[in-house]
Image (cartoon, rainbow over the protein chains, first blue to last red):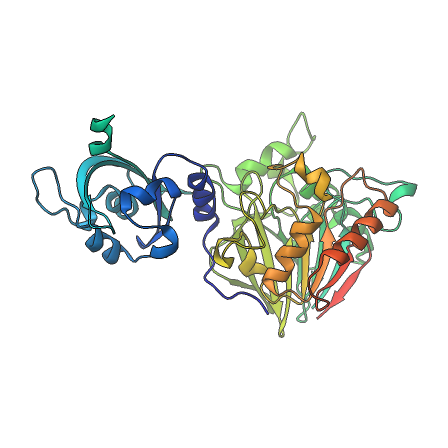
Length: 138
Length: 279
């Protein structure tokens, strides 16, 4: 009997393969913005493990992380780097604060790129991010 | 439907005494559908003798190409119906980020590699990039999906009358993934092979060979067996035989593959020229 779980597109499979080998914190979303994967390096920043989180829909992860801009104003999903990348198909970068699954607020910067196998076809996005507060400690 | 293997060798046509039992022709499977439609999987050198076996040209040919590596297209130039202007010839293949299928194939049909330009081929083929959703050819439903192999590459699933043939001749699902433990949704190509009656799958390397060929786009027999078991396929035909593997060595690999299987429910065999599967 086969395993019936949902098949991911090859582009996402390759994105997971790549990010799983990186020491850079990274996350992958699919075309609907569902957070389908984040790597081990991202776990301390997001304050939870991938095994605990599983897949999170766009609205879920955006709400849980409570993203804010440096002045404290909430950032809607469509203005987050990942939101811009999977929603509009263009790369983007910005600084923001998030609240991790462990309840800790962290200052981060994030760069997100869309995954477009052909012009006009967006299959998802990858975000690389880093923690600015930890950077200041170094 | 009825599928016949006309070429099961990978990489390079390899005729000779060492390969007579499993054959030396490169990838090609002809699939006759119940409504009489003809679907051909890949155009390796095996397509030439298949063309010669046809009494007359069929009215329409649907050629499904998995990717454009030479061993999957080199026979097309010598396929008789391709040169028959009465044939409606449709060539399906993987989409690429920038150039069309026709643009990518055209250099292979042009000097200095070949004297006749693609635009002058009498059948005036139509080039179609495979859709991301299943589609119909004749009485069959076809599904294509991008799979792990260098460059744009797809695998195919052909379903008709309750039977399913999955064809992933060049595939490295184990690249970057432990197939025994990773969640099924993250295994390249698995949905194409799910519960297939027959899975024709890359099994080019021994485990020792694979260790020094990771990333080349092909599977060890171990990964092929694991993939088939995860998919719940009923029958696995190991395909894309290495041109350096003679018949005796292939049979040794088959014996090892059968030992690797964790369930007797999976029937494992070596694909060979002339082998047929009826559904």
